[in-house]
Length: 127
Image (cartoon, rainbow, N blue to C red; front, side, top):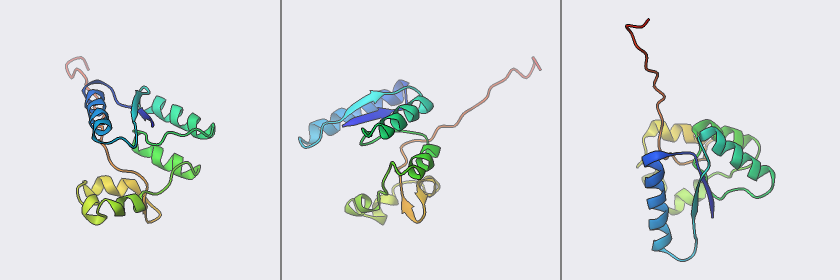
């Protein structure tokens, strides 16, 4: 399974550990986590793969990518998969604000992984 990941550093290490644990836990699906650069680069690579007819099975992308990929019919809703995992009980594990971002047209299109908070630092004395 091709899995572009738009995270680096300690979060990428955690992702690699989770993928390794998943691969050890079963023999039906093998996942290969591929660092694809930052969110923009990961989206570009995923979108290129979609357009070439060889889409990734999963991708870690930023929230706005959901709408782009949905609008070009590159993703499917996850409601059936979520129902198999416990439905509302499964969704309740996530912050409701994050799940709202994952919803559109009454369907769930993504699962929150993590949220980034861009921070701008400046030297107050300099200004």
